[in-house]
Image (cartoon, rainbow, N blue to C red):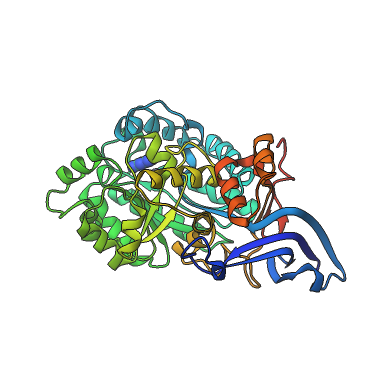
Length: 433
Ligand code: GUN
Ligand code: ZN
């Protein structure tokens, strides 16, 4: 059994930092050794005390080794339609998105986009993501098959949608149910793949489909559930027209019994107090998608209000409403959104959110999101002097907090020096990087 040791500065979080000086919330090693065997971290400590006999040592000094980023919400089938010029969510969906996703009826297209999508994730240091596929089961097969080839822990599912979209994209309550059951049987728990039951949102699912979603969620409590909520005012008004009996938008999902600890709700921007309380009680996760929310003019996520009311929160790119695959760019835009809310997210809290925080949102904190014995060796190596601009700022930097803030404010895929997926080098081995 071969053993690899990564040498470098190491940062990993134990819990959410309470303040910028909360040094108990993380482990930082100035000259650390991460030992890896069979894709798993087996030891972590100072390099000086590590057992290096028989191990292959890869020296990443002076770079920073961290857990790989986790992206809690994206649409892999929108990889080729980022930067679509639209005024707002519903225009964007109808003009571009529902056209683009129809291409996934073709297996060849789905397979090709899946390869490019995973290359992009790796280039940007994202080792786990939660994805919407299209309504075509073959798009899900392409998504998980490529994840398996790369040994990546990925979560995803077939979008269910049976109205308010082109016919070519719509399923039916029965076919959505049958296809989802078959895909869960084929992929959930196979290798590192995990399934997310994925009703797109209330606007594109009839009450009959929501009933089927209720059944799927009840029959598969070990699967995730993902949908969108309260992203845009016009969307909220239309949702309430379509479900006149619901107390509010969140109430629709509540009525169909799909809110639980494994439920991830994209956007969750304009929630009222009752909705906030319902999400807190259910333990569902509100997913902050800053680049998308700015790009589509959707609104400013109120992180502090949600967190102080006990709602679990995560962060994501929301490709292709989002404008970058990079979680560094996402943290930067998230910081700016919160600035506009008068809220200040310190750099430790940011990097916690993109790693351990998102792992906790998935209930996977014992597997991914931190570096410790027994965890998967899904790791990234960050170079905070990767570009000329970063180098200039780097020269004046004196603290770890400054370094993290520099990485998030000025960094992108160029700052990701290397990526390890289950202990294997994944970025430097990409073809045509
Ligand atoms: N709401 C329903 N579908 C989508 C989507 O694809 N992207 C975004 N941003 N919001 C949605
Ligand atoms: Zn989305």
